[in-house]
Length: 142
Image 1 (tube, rainbow, N blue to C red):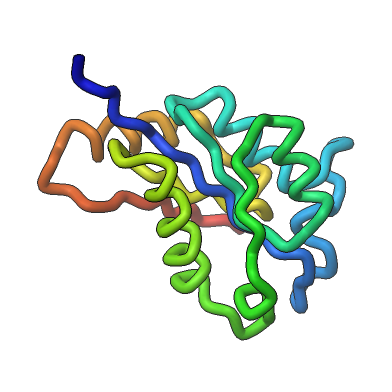
Image 2 (image 1 turned 45 degrees about the vertical axis):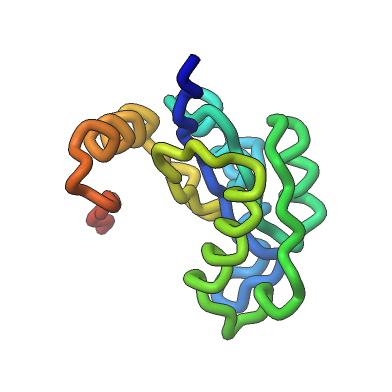
């Protein structure tokens, strides 16, 4: 029997923020902003959710949504830390758990406006067209 390829969701968010203090856990409509990424993942085509963070509040939210917690090392939670390094660290750990990964969707914990329909559409597009290696969304806000 062939194993089903997994659609992975990776939520990233660190504890400290220079620009907007506590932006990842600031309450928006009664929920911490990071929670919206977990809600989007829950109602999407994503099979398994991981969260890379050094923030106890985000970890607690992750546990509430049965996410796999990736403890982000201190060197990847500084203002000068690169997102690419965080993604590389997380990918190594995700690949230890799953070999049959079809897609990985990156969800930012400071974005409460994730459109589940567009997320699902992106997953389907990348899954269908094997010549694609990535897909990302762009939005213009006034």
